[in-house]
View (cartoon, rainbow, N blue to C red):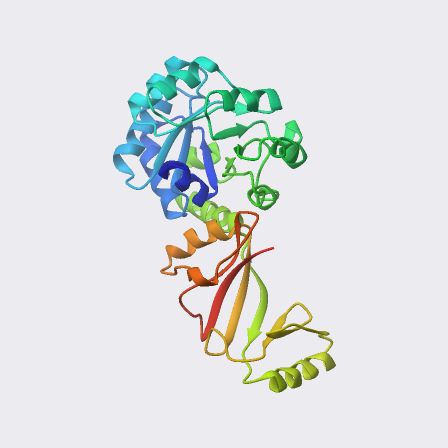
Length: 318
């Protein structure tokens, strides 16, 4: 996967933007960056699209700007000339795909059937847009297509918002999700940049779905762990013994010896450990490679290199 697609994967969400006034483009781009979403898909649904792409590229360093609703080679030519780094189409137009490939610009055409996926594979594409996602069967259809096309990655778009975002980004075949609820046209028109930045920040957190899975408590030896588990059992947390620890219910893991963290560890549940690592890296954390556990080609869990309040932290994908 090239660096551009990696950025889209790590972000997990592609804001789909309809903008009518190009003079607002750079302010919008800066709001996206402030909200932690460094990707923009500016759709060719208005006459301002081309100039908006040009201004975002020039005035918003760090923002990966692409063009959407590109339905012909001519529109692709205009978008690329304006600086679009990637092209997204609502359907599969072979001429548009060929033009982008000839100019070495990543293209993500829309598909919603196995035949269209095979057409994308025939062009050597790695990523396709699943559109319109909800109207085409949603996650059930995505599951059906992911089976025979296990190496293909999708960007579901259409009918996705904060209420179902987590279900989509958790799917192993999903590179990212496209959506517009954080960049609605009325917010752009009104210049409500702080509101857009806030919605983007909320959407970014929703991509990751961080939640406390359990608290690990270090004990000096097995007897001390057993004694603590017995006390927690009185409070209703039923013990389940393992080799190196005792789980009390699902909330506490009592370690039979001192492990990572001065006091123990915090297990944070997330939708994708890989995406969560990229997010945490912006906060100064890195993963400890020797603690990584992989399941079916995806990271299942990994510890971070810094503690929080005397607790080690490990990310966990359910």
